[in-house]
Amino acid sequence: MHKDINNQLSKLQIREILEEDAVITLKLVLEMADESDNYPFTSEDYAMSIENQRSFINYMNSLDNCIFLGAFIENELCGILYLEGGRRQRTHHICNLGMGVKKEYWNNKIGSALMSKALEFVYDSEHIAKVDLQVRIDNKYAIALYKKFGFEIEGKNKRALFIDGDFVDYLNMGKVID
Image (cartoon, rainbow, N blue to C red):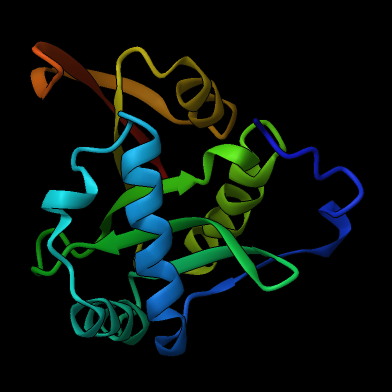
């Protein structure tokens, strides 16, 4: 069952994930991993401790080519998006994007709100020239969202995932930042 949050959308807050959000962030990632096959992991093999989550948040918040965003409605974390920039000199300008919205909040424009805020960060940055992502080839809603924000299909990773006895391909999508 999806939540109809039309009356609560005015209360939607997109902000950076902070160290004190580590517990709720990890809880959300584990929930999303098990409620959808759109992620490359399950809660069982995610293998992130609270301390590792805190370290990841601090790492993301310490760099000029990274951001970790959360979508909150009345203090409930319902979606996340991260842009992780390259760690080496030759890839510092490229960010990898990952995002997810809790299933009960799908189709309420939370993904669009997260993407808008992330691209605001990208365009304000002097360091980011490209954003890349991977998405399941059959995730038509996510693909439509990414296309809406100017991402283009750049290729395919065949047999990227193995889920319930079947191989699933990924689309590689990217957005050049001018």
